[in-house]
Image 1 (cartoon, rainbow over the protein chains, first blue to last red):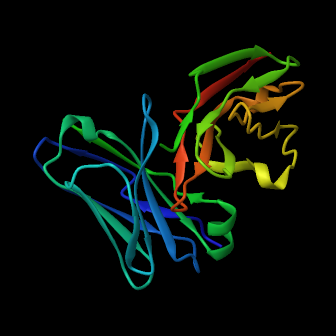
Image 2: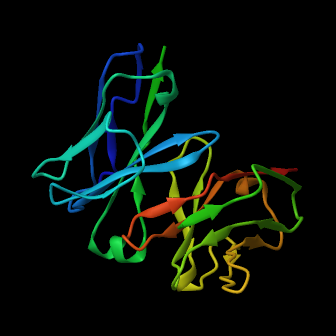
Length: 115
Length: 108
């Protein structure tokens, strides 16, 4: 099976712009989670989608949003970018057994730099 | 509050030395805990989960409810163990809460 695919892998934006990141889960996985990874904070949970519904949400401002499509692909959007949004954004998918076992399958991430 | 604490940002040892990566958690109820690992230029991946009580690549982790800890141990470190290690807790809404991570460096 192909792994979790995230696009774009790298991007540079300026403050005030907005960005959309995409994630294609492993085939058959219906749950997609997003995390922000920074050196000081580790992995911070953004949100989780299951069958096009947001099931969990982290403590991020409303500038961070996401959605999931009927084919389980997911996108996250960050509006009005700030310098502090520079990070590696990781997407992870899991199937039914994975959800029970706690095993997430991660993508390589999208590295966002805000100038 | 549900929280995972990894007090060490960096742990450096020599090859063959024992390793213990610390993890403490805060959770009311029966916790489910995991260790994830990220090797250089690789994806973050599950290393082991406490429910399985397994040993993976020589690593073990025991849940200590009294001390609210889930430390990762290996008796003899190898150079290929050098990586970033994250402890994670399954929350009561089934999301995984990660710690800030510990970088393990194993010197030859």
